[in-house]
Length: 421
Image 1 (cartoon, rainbow, N blue to C red):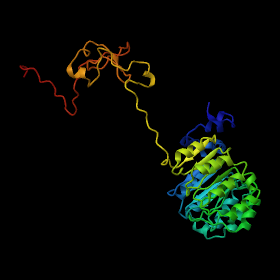
Image 2 (image 1 turned 120 degrees about the horizontal axis):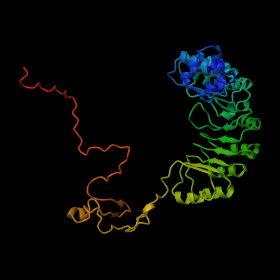
Image 3 (image 1 turned 90 degrees about the vertical axis):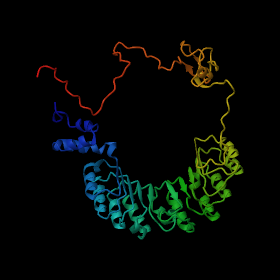
Image 4 (image 1 turned 135 degrees about the vertical axis):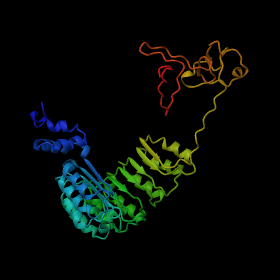
């Protein structure tokens, strides 16, 4: 029976178990096999993610998209060459609108081409276009974000370069955002949010947002008041602060106003001690995940307070301030592990390598007596030879004398007997 004799709906299921090269070979057999491979790729998780590095050639990108594009759900590209952009756009078109995540890094894509790519992906949920994208950095991000939102209404994660913070620039154009970012993807310097009217519009528009990222942000008292006056604190579950400039009192005020908060990432530019963690435990003892860079000079005391939270996850970047655990010195004759029940002294007649018995040649080496070592290690006969293994009926005995192996020497023929010639 051949593949052509099988039902059509069974061939794609068989193709899922074929390696990549065999799948390509099956695709070249006939039209029915090619259609079966195409249907198999659409539901095969092996081809759900496509990654193109900086050395990928345009023809290879186009071929990958033509063959495996129907099953792609994620596309990540690091291609900086301008010739690779049409091939990437062709690959996105081959996905037939099934792409859900698009990440473009270090490329010269223009705002018009990026908009065309987004229009070919109506189900897109994640869009990332940052790190050395000069044409997007100089474009009108607010107008571009409005057009992208109309083409992809399901976007939940958007990262675009902007001069100010993301929540002030384009967050209000995407109502399904899950995380509000108060920093800029265009540069690594600190941002001071000041356009509170746009922040308020984003806080009221993004009704699904339940996370806040304050990395590279200078948090002022006015910003905290705007945040607390919005409906966001009632549904906030994650508050992340990386290289954030903020006072400990403002942190406690934000935590106190968020009853559903379960994840907290503390800033790395501050040294918080035991009093802060005690106040944090008194304010929100239901936290499940905490990330902190270090514990200050009283690291042991801070960890004692953190142990009272009942955390499911604790991430610590530095443990320099904690007291290292010292190993307890075992008493004389004490053993540990599975040999703890054995005696910890050498039995009479047994000896160890390098012991006084061995140096003096005392009895115990040739009579085959055994004993237990100081560390509980079972000692065998100390006659200097390896313990003989039991012979197996399937194993031919070996000669104890091993013949030397000669390499590179040709054997000479035996000389003829004398007297014949």
